[in-house]
Image (cartoon, rainbow, N blue to C red; front, side):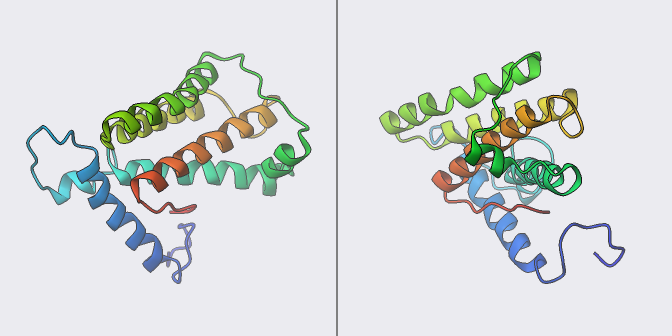
Length: 177
């Protein structure tokens, strides 16, 4: 923050760190199948890679950052695209297809959770979605591409589904880290 390399202001740090810390502990508990053994580990909870809330919250913040940069750097506001229905999602790349297929699984996951009440199913879905998002962002140029509007819509759809998962798990979300 002092070197001006962080996206957060000093005033935002306490809220973001509390959200991430609480989310890390809660997610670590919820992601476990209740029929398996449990071992408490702060190191595993706070890992920035793998199936942790820190990784998932970072993936969400990355999506929000891409949408924000689309608005500020390219004058393409994804909220305007949605409200005006002026753009469509076009799926040409295999990573776009994989992401959309993950997004479509959300309703089925919720149906399964309603049947057996195991929140770890939401955690598994959220982690798989985050991996699909990461692959999509890495393999498909979003900002400045000819497919930018479509890909921004995919980013927003992914962020919305991730927020719904966080809400269902009782975990807050952050837009910037």
